[in-house]
Length: 104
Image (cartoon, rainbow, N blue to C red; front, side, top):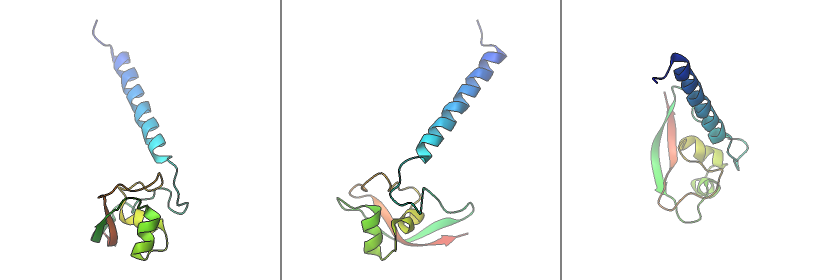
């Protein structure tokens, strides 16, 4: 028996619920830096990295921020929206932007 229109609607609704659940869980991760809480640059603004360095064993966003002269890990996370720092250490060899500017 071929799927009915109602079957397709149920499948689409289920897929949307799964997407919302995944997005909610992903965005609700623990974060060591309370000031940041997963913020990325505002829409239309991107970050142009001018200097990056490879993380070493044991590096965290806090240690990289201090070494780069930043006040907190929030600065490193702003420059690196793809880096998740709240859950622990960076992996050795991971490139981390340590100097950049907002463009847009």
